[in-house]
Length: 128
Image (cartoon, rainbow, N blue to C red; front, side):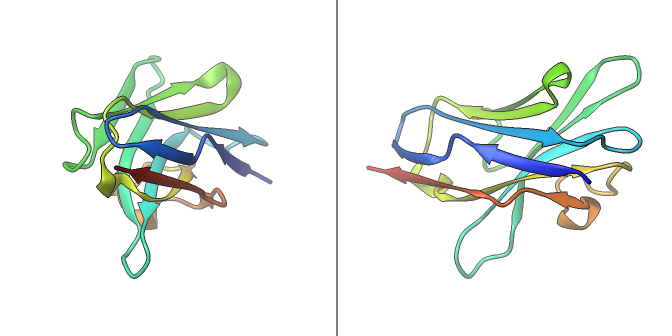
């Protein structure tokens, strides 16, 4: 049974730093594809960033246009943890952030359908 637990949410001022962590317990079958999604009331869950560790050890990342250049996704495979970080939080980053994992390559790296394991979510509120 794979469980994903997010941490690091809370309140942050616009322009400030935000760092989320997601730790996976249990063994993911196959290769690991991890991602962060976010959702605001009345809107669909959207992909923020995704990361894949190739068999060679190289990491490949994908970012939504709305966060490209501001957010960084990274992974510590030894700790089974994936991170999401920004030093330039914006008001529009306010959302519930979800960690997700897939054991097979998602057709769309930032598509909800490709991920079978989900965390409970952590609220991030960016204020002015």
